[in-house]
Image 1: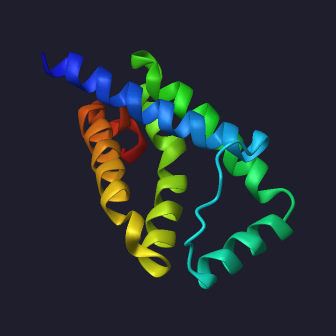
Image 2: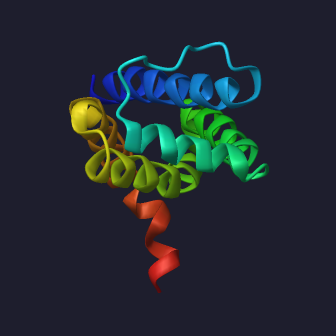
Amino acid sequence: MKNKILFVVALLFGLMFLNAGLDKFFHYMPMPEDMPEEMQKTFAAYMQIGWLLPLVGVVEIVGGLLVIIPRTRALGALVILPVMVGIVLANTTGDTSGLPLVAVMSAILVWIMVENREKYAPLFK
């Protein structure tokens, strides 16, 4: 039962990152209209660095796909970890309205990593 729940949660987690990564290329999700000025400046800076958003988009797409596949889930969690750290930092230093969702996403990532801890053991030897 636990494996089925983890699969569904990892599937939704991976699809969210896949969606976010695809949006970096196709811009189909509208930007929130009530975004604070500081966050607008931050996103404008990201847009000025032409290679940053496509790089993050590729990492989100690849990581999301890897998390969805049970065999590669541990690798996908490692790929998504730096992006998730950036998301946490952006939501704690800027607009904090997204913190509940970020907390849930972080908890899912930690759960995936804890469930795959034996696969990470060789990294620490």
